[in-house]
Length: 260
Ligand SMILES: CC(C)(COP(=O)(O)OP(=O)(O)OC[C@H]1O[C@@H](n2cnc3c(N)ncnc32)[C@H](O)[C@@H]1OP(=O)(O)O)[C@@H](O)C(=O)NCCC(=O)NCCS
Image 1 (tube, rainbow, N blue to C red):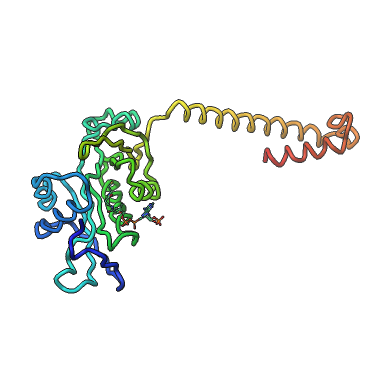
Image 2 (image 1 turned 45 degrees about the horizontal axis):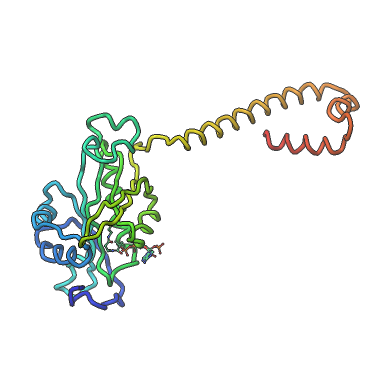
């Protein structure tokens, strides 16, 4: 159930969205919106930590075009925590550098935008803030999060923002007596990257082998050209075109273009 102040108030005026850290005065609205937007209940300690910035970093969105008393009321939020990569469940998804003890990750705890302000790009901007923050931390290698498998708007959003879906976790959530899967999404920053999968290794090898072959063929062709250019015309033909001259010339012209 949505709070009465949010029901069916589609934004008709031009909103002026401003992003700012979440502060103690946001406590009530923060708790209420979490209650309305998520099927999971959060402890009051969580909200205390968010508004007081204890172990949690957060950004809120407000619409300054709203009447005075609401112009600083949260209409969107994102909360994150910094996690040492060795303590995270995604350590294996980072390259070998993850074994360094000083590597960290930014984990998105909650992200939400009230119904009447959806599809205005507010969540995208909040995620941009998180990515900027992660980039500013030299130890940070990735931003990651879980999303319940049926949350298509959120999945669409993360894919649009170039997050990679790296894992499906079966029965990850247990909500109202039922299990749900989750997807794990990662956005690598500061040189963080996933270790190569066997498929990626094969692809890399094939690409490398192909480019190596092309290079070799190009060199051979250049050498051959050098030799040919020294020969009289008829010799060139007899060397290159023993049986069907015109056709072979075309083939070779094509190959030459490809090698350049
Ligand atoms: C997910 C959520 C945060 C998105 O907020 P938002 O401010 O509307 O997001 P944005 O406007 O930045 O981007 C929305 C994108 O999702 C798309 N979208 C919206 N509803 C969609 C739907 N039902 N199915 C697929 N895509 C949808 C929009 O079209 C837009 O993409 P586009 O730019 O390609 O058109 C918001 O829907 C929400 O708060 N949901 C409830 C809480 C939640 O699920 N949080 C995420 C938990 S992981």
